[in-house]
Figure (tube, rainbow, N blue to C red):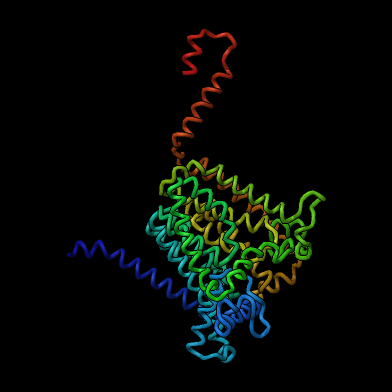
Length: 463
């Protein structure tokens, strides 16, 4: 009995430490969440919640109370807002303006809880694939990450919800849980259309993992799609829910909506006034150039890591390469795509997080990008008098941040190359790639041969 108690004691200590961390993170967020944040976003979300309760979930897609903006979020987001509205209705009645602080806390609560859920998720992931101490450290860092606190608890945005689903889906995929991974990636898509940043990537890794695993991913995704869309079908407004997702591209048809990315580096403030359908040098539109660059980024990560994903074997190298690639694609999506808002780099904060636990350089790069992201957020919605004074005193600070993003992006792209070539152990080749490698080796030898050679020697080489 004493031996068992001694063995279990470190586990109990870690469990208590984790619980204390999460409780402190929750209390801190609830305190921050009492602030108004970005009142337009918070008020719009509250209006969606109110309309979903008083008009019905399906009807609220085509009709809103009090002149509120029609929803432009996918169906599951509206289900979440409607659930919050019903909680308020059950506790305080149908006067949604009577208790503004309580309603504000409730509308921010899903993002707050998924922040803490992501921290808990990284505790288990890093504990499994790195070490127990790394898991606890990861939970602590993510719980008190300034950019995470800022966007969810202070601003009142909901990017952490679909980011949590994407992170969980990728973590489950890395562990070989394909059905659950498919279910969560579908749930992420029905929460925020920006999940398409991992759409092609998830398709590629599912196919590389083998047709059986691909079928499992699809088997997990399809029931989720049915369950999410079913209430709208019952309400006779299914087409409106589908149209919201289909019409997302082009909803904000400008080059950049306050995101300090590649386009802000080149165009500065005018990126917020130029239509992304305009032609660049009379050749290609800004929007299509962004699509092309993002597609090339998918090709880049696939060419780098495909040997580790085919055939797929759960392991430390697979885990870190999957998250490094996904984090890079999230960064690329923000950096080269048009119509980006300042907060659309949030998925990198989670998907790129394991990169900080590979080595010191990975940690430095992750920290740099996180600080640049926080600076971008503060450039649009100041948090304190310090950042408000900085941006008013130095009017070109936004361009400087965008230029720093350019160098940081190049550094992350180079880091991925070093990760595969120098940091991780060599990947084992499967039968097909080994056969191709052997044939190429013979071809190189054949090209170096003299023109005259005995037939017996030719037979030995080509054997």
